[in-house]
Structures are given as C-alpha cells and as structure tokens.
Amino acid sequence: MGKFTKIETPLKGVYILQPTVFEDHRGFFMESYNKKDFEEIGLYFDFVQDNHSLSVQAGVLRGLHFQLEPKAQTKVVRCLKGVIYDVVVDLRKGSPTYKRWIGVIISEYNKRQIVVPKGFAHGVLTLVPNTEILYKVDEYYSPEHDMSIRWDDPDIGIEWPIANPILSEKDKNAPYLRDVEDRINFYYKEEGE
Image 1 (cartoon, rainbow, N blue to C red):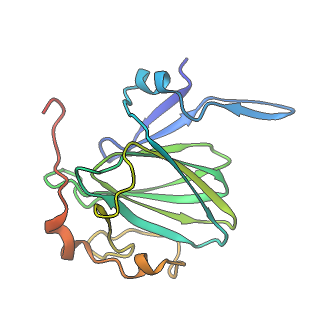
Image 2: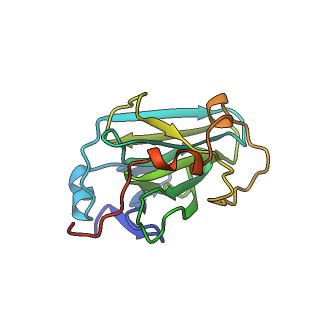
Image 3: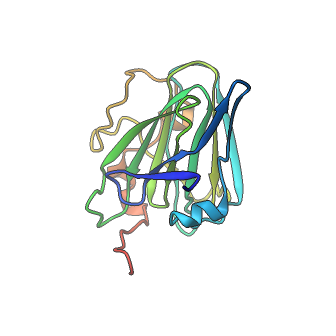
C-alpha cells in the first residue's frame, strides 16, 4: 500500500491527498511529502519553496491568489494546526470546468492535503483561531506575476461559510475576474497535448 491515497475532485488535476498515518499512545507519525511516493501516484513536481502562515483569528480569508505564466505555481497545501475551508477555482480558458470551484475542509485532524495545479486560483478561510498552513510550491514567488481576484466574485459564486471575512488590503481591493480575464494566460489542455 502506498503512503498517499489520491482522491479525484470535480476539477481535473485538483486532488485531495490522504496520507497514511501511524498512531499509537504517543501520538502519530506520517510522511507529508515523499517524492518517490508522489510519483507513484502520478504527481511529478519539483518543489522549490515552502510557505508557512499563521492566522490568529477564525474568519481570516486569504485569496483568491495565483501567479501568471511563466511563473505559475503548483501548490500542495496542508493545515498543521486548526481547520481551513480551502477553495480552488479553475481559471484555464477552454476548460469544461472554467470558473467552477470546489471547497474542502483540510485540518490538523483529517491530515489531508490538496493539490492546486497551475491554472487555478486558490483561497483559504480559517474556521478556528490560531490556524497554521504550510504549502509547497514548484515556482518561486514573483511579484510581477502575482495576481488575485475577489473572494466574493458573483461570476464565480463561491459559497463561503462566512459573510464578513477578515481580509488584507490586497484581498479587499482585488479585481473581479471579468476585469482581468484578458490578462490571465492559463489555457486548458487535453491529456497528451
């Protein structure tokens, strides 16, 4: 048996990963990343950076973020402490799921991770105080390629479990997708293309 179970989602290329966890009276042990085991389940990434964030309050929303090509990032996100509602939006032009989104609970309790490929916007909402998130990326941060869109964009229609989240100034002032759609350079490709 592999160390990770890859769970498909309605968005092609977005996966939930369930690690194998060994628990006993002392606590638990798990591998959160293993290049060989990822490749055995078809996930080939060359990670270059880990990002770690703490949100002190419940209701902190970070997103919806992404980087444009050629500096787009694949992310593998996990919650070290607390509980998050993790949202992924398909921004690949020509995709059968363009502008569709999924939301999943990732927590210190279920120990799941989510794979967010290039071409998708990503957002995280903390559901409890003192939530810590760690995520791996396969491209360095690039300010000139960094973009965001509104968390409450009506053309996307995400059903967040909160009406008034705590936002950064950047996220409060993020544009609607329709206002930046022509700048987004993600395109859907069929397998084998």
